[in-house]
Length: 155
Image 1 (cartoon, one colour):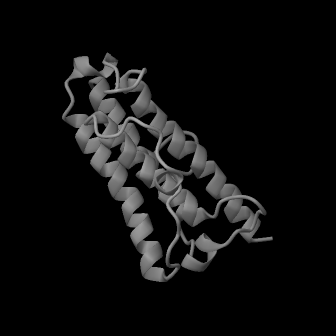
Image 2 (cartoon, helix red, strand yellow):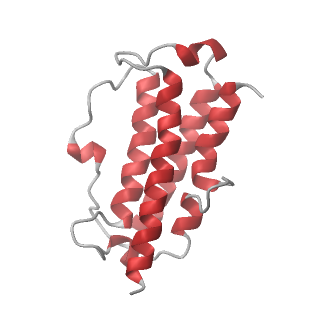
Image 3 (cartoon, one colour):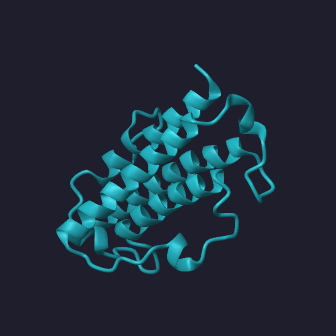
């Protein structure tokens, strides 16, 4: 298996699994209602919904960076997209966006040439492989936050 294939699979597995460390994003989000997702059970912390949109946004940013379309730090409303409407359909759309953003990024990664992984991200100072590993680490980190917020919702 090539490094390209490994990275693409890890990006997908961040959402759908399996990964060895525990619940992946889909597992962490299973059974969360729109109302629960929009709640702020920990003062000063983001909601589950906000985290889902943030994770999706960074997979989209990574894809844009691969294509040389996004090199600057994103503005806050892109980094942490606001929850505009908190209905069930809106929550379903947020989950869909998270899944699709990772699926689309993985498909884009599969289009890369193996030798390009060590190339710098266009306009940035680090290689493509670091960007892609970062997306996996980012999703895993926020998955842990989601699990803590779920626990806080039950108290």
